[in-house]
Length: 577
Image (cartoon, rainbow, N blue to C red; front, side):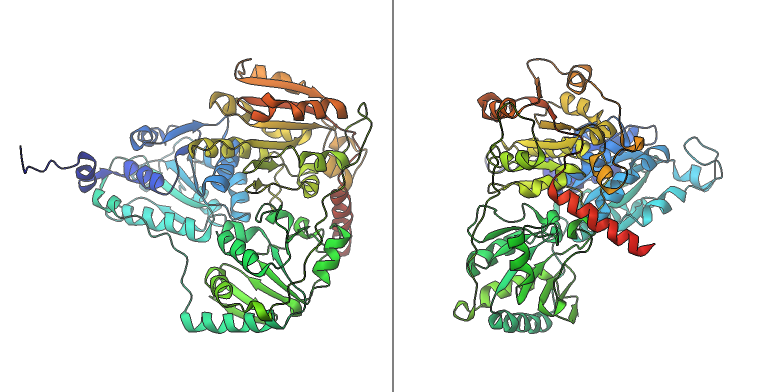
């Protein structure tokens, strides 16, 4: 009928009351999450029924720890992730993964289905409890590894609680904990709120203070004779890479990354100088960084492995530190002045006629020329991988040889690198690969996901291979078979039996976990020529199915960076005894 307006059913629905679980999952969808990781349990089952109704996918992992690792990997690629576990037994199994996300500043929403408010109020003796009537004990365990903890117990407050908690997750780029009692999942809340997006913006600096800090930064930058930029993990976590790239493009200053900051900048750029990690760095990198009279340090996270046993030889007098919550110019500290606003104004106001950016002689890692029939070594392998990688690949490296070997790999533009240098939970990378590959799929992009993991580490998370297969994901998995925990051998106990592992028939696990010949492929590579042939194979390069590569290296072979870092860390530990 002419002139008659038919209301949009979807819009109309948003004006009506909605169930708590629906509100929560729709907010997660708006938050950027498209898939929910977790393990079902009787205290979360009613809530899980809402997932498909909210245009989300459920990803059931083999166990909660792997699910937490997967959520970590998903969030690093997609921007945020969600994990659902059940009370007690489920949430505690996930805590190691959540702690890693907290340490490494990864935004994961941990939703815990728990007993009803009535059961909690009456202190009922329920399963999955400690039998003492204390229903807060597990949440208390999560308090120190969550930037926000909320319990959804009052329907009149729940919508606001959910919005605030998600906002804190984004703002701090760290996990949050949401307790959802069984009798709250279907309570009603105001649906109209869903029409208004959650405010996801950084804390805005006070203008006059910010301008003062910018003036101080520019004064030292214009006076410097050899300024350089050093980019670390928090530049990635707190989303200032656009500012970093604009700063590099405008100033043409030499730029370096830390191990945790690798992939933060375009490594094919003419100003890229390499990885700086103290004594484990290339001599030319050490010379440029430690000889600079001004280091613009963006998002630094100076952990032991990120600095090769705290072996930086830089002075705070020649450093300006940019962080999400403060800026430090030499020894002057400016709390509350976050880096995004400061960096943007520095980019806009820097006087290029006063800038003394010294050019850098770009040096690629030297690729050895081993015998084709020869053994694959760490020193040859990692530079060789540089030419195999493509723009926009997602590269995951496990704690151990891979985390250190990858320093010698030069990434093409657009690569996203995932590593867990600070928390360093062995086995993290397998679950993280599932999450990363799923994030790529959810984003509708055609990026390859590539994992480098040692045999010892793989054994801790091997079951998540089955989730990858079931989810139709296509990662390339390079399993480095070197007979045990190599990183531990170099730290202590080269021949100790506690660093040994059982030798599995690794590639056969593809079949055991449900792989089929049309959806998966498996390879065994023991020589240089075999690897060269595989890396040149067009079908392998295309990565249209899950590909699993058993890659053999000598037991006592390790990347140089691992050896020097282990030695430096050993000295630090010795001083503390």
